[in-house]
Amino acid sequence: MDEESGLWPFLSRLFGAKNGHTIEKRIEEAAQEGELKADEMVMLLNVLRLGRKQVFDIMIPRTDIVCAEIDDTLSEVMQKIVASGHSRIPIYKENRDNIVGILYAKDLLKVLSDEADGLCAEPPPTLQEFMREPFFVPETKNVKELIQEFRSRKVHLAIALDEYAGTSGLVTLEDLLEEIVGEIEDEYDAPRPEDVQPLGDRRYLVSGRTMLEDLARDAGLELESEQVETVGGYLSELAGRVPRQGEVFHVQGWRFEVKEADAKQVRTTILSPDDGAAAILSLPRLADSPRQRND
Image (cartoon, rainbow, N blue to C red; front, side, top):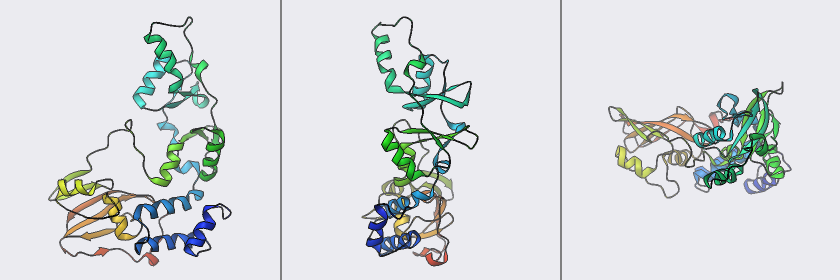
């Protein structure tokens, strides 16, 4: 992170440190000592690490972009918008390496309203009339710099280009926010699988987003915390940081093994009866373990 940014000197004063890795360690120690909540620790660490990431690290890859072709009718484009739930989609000409515009769903509302009222324009409007100019950025652009450009340009979407000026991916303001606060879901996101999935023999696949009260209901394990509400948050609270893949926690006669995790959150765990029944936390010493980074 740029040492001249406003956050850096504030954190340096707060934790008495001079460089990023030392500040990260102080933040983790503050969480272990109960001075920071687990979610506060994660957000602070994510903000500090934001300057190390490039657009390529967080973008939606080219193959997953929902696009429309410039020759599509407005009706065809609206069907894609409804099916995807996106409020903005890129428009291309001939192929996806030639993005020529961005369509905002809200710009089509008047057309739909007029059609509903039987006021069809002659000739009918074309897609080109509603396109907005695309914002292109190199896939190697620093994520922190992109946030500033989104603010100054007042846009929420950018097309990422590779070194040959081909379309590499797409990045949105929501993608940037999720790098700080974790995954953001809305009513248009695809439904997620059950948070607690039985695997047999009293073993469960448990999402890190599972509410503690739901875990008690579905698996019979009651965990209490005044600071967090989810399984992932609970394990982060125990560790004083975001646990790494493969780490094991022994809690109340049960064994949590972290199956999937990244720098921001625990995604899934395997819950099973603890043969040792030891109410301890099995973790490598923090000082001896490499810090997980998502650079």
